[in-house]
Amino acid sequence: MRRTDKQEFIYITEEKTKGREIFKKVYGIGEKEYATISVQLGLSSNQGRGVTSYERSQIDTYIKRRMKFTMLITPDFHTKPIEQNLRAAMNAKILTLQNIKTYKGIRHKKGLPVNGQRTKTNAISARRKR
Image (cartoon, rainbow, N blue to C red; front, side):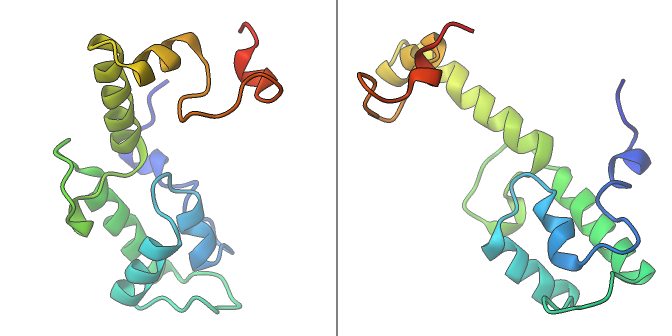
């Protein structure tokens, strides 16, 4: 079932949620991005209370704007992908590695550790058949 735009952001902005907790739920926004966003939107990181309805609407519009990403990854902060766009970009990179048959692509395809981790005595869960 595909969620609509309105339903998609209901889980992000619950009534008694603090500003920092809202952005922790968004895939692709970390502490550094949260600090920049909170300054832009005027959110206090030490808020003891929940987020007001005005702040919630600001956060929703900000996230919806960031979701409209064109799949062109640039170093500019405002065009950095989040949520589905980030996952799609990561999957596209992995598929490219697999198609050109690089070492990393082969390791991804086999489900083994990719970044040179030890597999003889560690990473048993990564080596198991799925």
